[in-house]
Length: 111
Length: 113
Image (tube, rainbow over all chains, first blue to last red):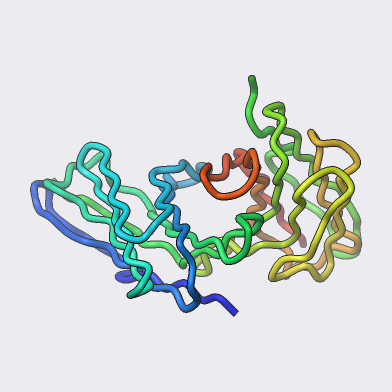
């Protein structure tokens, strides 16, 4: 059974600081996704990582995938308040027909 | 192009009642899935489909039925609602394998009393 673990689960940081969210998974997979969810809203796709060593960047967020270590990271650079949200990683176990999600990391960026 | 449309947005049921959560997508996506989201547990897969006429169980299928008679629609049926089914339900779709992420609907907040 595929397990996906994120840490930390709660992250409070100051504006302007850098931090990294980690996503570990238990079974070989080379497809990993990052989503953002604002309170009471749906999930928004941030990054699709499809191979070992993949790196994607959008604004202050950068995601990477190390399939050998079964680890993905979401790095936040110079955080701003607008980044406050819950971030989920999700892993494809089979042909992409089903995703297994981590518990989510609730990020709060304080002025 | 409406994306993934879920109805209703909110619903209150009494224990033992049945109902259907509707999900429709207009993007001609092959893959569709239903997830439930509970506090502290992320999203858990209920049922999924890789095309019309093909469905399969996910991680938490008990108490739910699905069917996929068309590419566009993927309804989720609660057979006899229980308080443990109080949750937020999300429908999602994608074109096919791998390279695309799933597009999620806006969710249905269900309370069973």
